[in-house]
Image 1 (tube, rainbow, N blue to C red):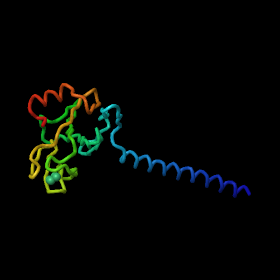
Image 2 (tube, rainbow, N blue to C red):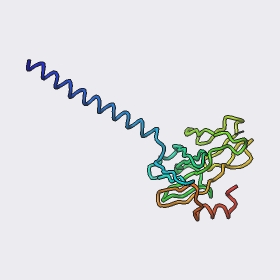
Image 3 (spheres, helix red, strand yellow):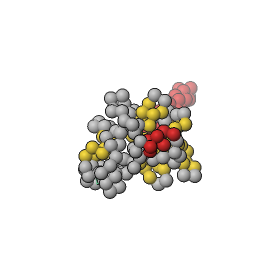
Image 4 (tube, helix red, strand yellow):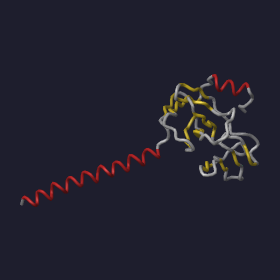
Length: 168
Ligand code: FES
């Protein structure tokens, strides 16, 4: 009798641990599925970049368009097109190929974007490095607020890029 209830108790304990373990797995999976925390309101998307991992492409949505956000690694070439947030540099670009509008895929091992439609390629600054794309990926209007990026608002950094002719 005592042995049985002990077994029951142990069963519950192990069952509990197993459930917790399962939750842990779910949590870990959810973390990798989830894009960066973002808030969408009235044409603006605010994205918190503090949890961004280098060389991991995040795809946000802004006005129905995919927005690529890629935290650069130190070995990636610096560019005037980089969005600087704190000490980090980011590629922020509309994720549509400038040839005919397909969505290029990021290849973390090669650190480039390949457009499957006609083989065009872009580097981690969004520059077109293999035709047919005729121009770099387009930078959307943005504003940097602390560790956050507001898509849809023209901040001073964006205006500077515009003046320098970096925005198509
Ligand atoms: S649409 Fe990307 S290469 Fe043609």
